[in-house]
Image (spheres, rainbow, N blue to C red):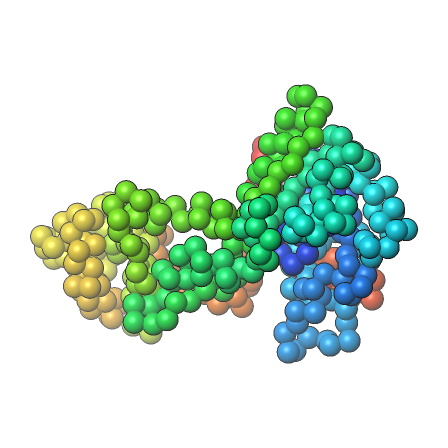
Length: 358
């Protein structure tokens, strides 16, 4: 499939921070013309100022901003100014998609809600991200959504405090939901030539992504507690063994055959004969005792030997890499997008559209 599949698509981005701009970058990666309208009064998207201490304080751009604003045309406009507003309306009149994260009341007051924009462009697809839904005016921040939807309560070590995810995962999840909705609306538009409003809230996207943890509660009243990386339903899954050199390896054993091969690789066939570990249910119940035995075997083996044998016998385990190691891999390097900036510098970020269609 050509990466320019949306080369005839025009997208106006009226959003900032992460979720909305991530949707805009998705379309930019697939060839669409994406025009990002930034707030002239505040100096543009706030993430331009979200810099690490090591970044150049004089530049009006940050590494964070680079992450989800590749190949877009930025226009700095004051939407309260009649002339600027007229110019943006003119762009929207010929656009296919508008992406917004304005709260409902301010959007309506400014004249950039769906009701106002569909008068200008009846076939427009209007993608909206809110915090808690269109009837709720509260602003949304990823960490707070993680706290309110159970993610933080479940995340962390057993005896430690709740911990948020190290990326704004709720924003990213909501962006994926909005992409899906917009693509469905595009298919609908091809059939009946009508536009649509597609909306998703950070809250709904977060709850919808609780997956098996949500199902454990609503079916069994099992309220998940913090247990580090351990999986509530599978063992050994999330456990960490340390090799002879002190290198930690994560185990992600998903079925009986993988468990049997793991024991063979580690040279502990006696574990297979132990009734405490005969099936997954028993292993979940006795996972502490199981890890003790697996670790005793791993103590005398090198990481190279364990990983080599694991790959040979299709046993899912591997090293816990830092980003320096991750981006040294050629597979990861292939996911980097570069851009030449107006000041002559080169910016980098990872792709957001990594699927392949053939």
